[in-house]
Image (cartoon, rainbow, N blue to C red; front, side, top):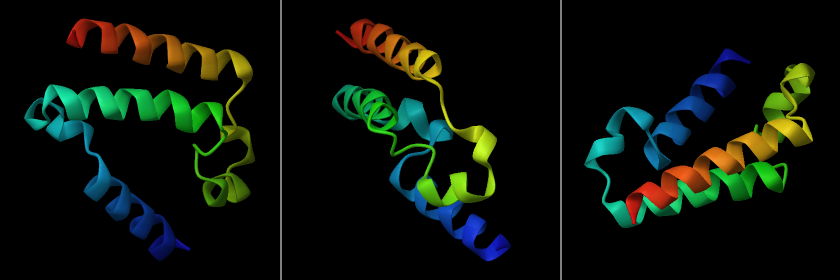
Length: 79
């Protein structure tokens, strides 16, 4: 199981890494911020495989709204 978690972390960091945020172009930052909201709204994050083990990690509608509100505000700052 730990290999699966390590694999998810590795794959996730290859796709997007908050530690490298400042190195992304504004277009990429905008894309990632939009994806954060979109993926959570569609219940694609947290990953379904993660939720099998951590059922309490499921996001509420209010938490999803908070993520989307934050990501929209951050996207506005990029303009």
